[in-house]
Image (cartoon, rainbow, N blue to C red; front, top):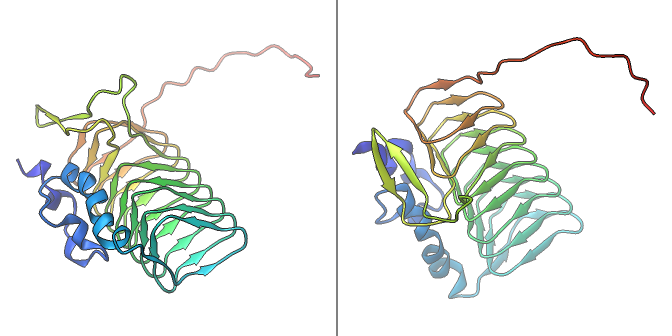
Length: 236
């Protein structure tokens, strides 16, 4: 079905800076599994350690890496290779880029954000205090501050997703979310492992999203707030 295919979520793969990571991949989980092979061929075998970025104070970069020109790495950032980072990326202070991360051109990784074994496509922005694990972020997609793209079940079993009534096993126990092109995930939202969100969706702040969200949908939080009288207590 089309909702399991990469091109349902991403229409600009051929424009992605590191598009070879998607070669011979049909589904999003194919691409997640291909990250390690891609990085092995591109920068591990040849022991590549290239940093063309402007790097601030107290930055730690280890392992194999390729970081392209025009990128700004602010103070106290930690980058653990293998990673590949494109042109004109801003990585703000305190961010942690973990092994297997592939970040395209003109992206923003916010203050104290953590990215692990994920593909962040061109012009995407991942804001402050977020966690992105084993996920794919589409072109121009926005992940709001404090959002969590969780990547492992409590029981550590394989991640499954239910699309159009069919339950699909991704074949891996580490899998986060797929966020299609031009989608927004609001501040302090949580995506359960195995969440698939189509392009042009808005997931509003504080929503816990799971399963499959078709393209061009908007999801609102639904909460019932209880208000009652409170006794006057002087605090120490």
